[in-house]
Image 1 (tube, rainbow, N blue to C red):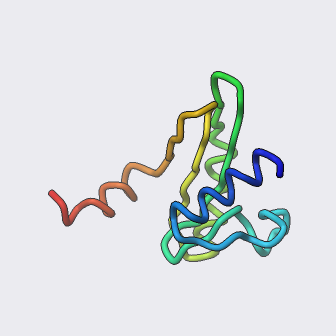
Image 2: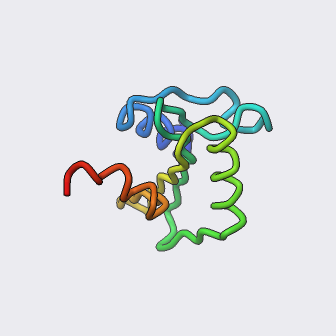
Length: 98
């Protein structure tokens, strides 16, 4: 199994989602993983860094809007797992806790 496949499977388990057929390679079925709330783009690298461009983020946001979900970028950099979420979306999700 390729590392990117293992990352997608780990995200499915972590978020309770379903894998997108073709891993988002179709315009009408974007993303790697879908949950009821999120459209997740899973990324994995063995390098020491991962760069996120506004173009990449804006594309994910548009796709998430199209699927009525919040965009979420799940990144694994070596052994560190990170989540990128829009600040306003994050504030709305945690508003009931503060």
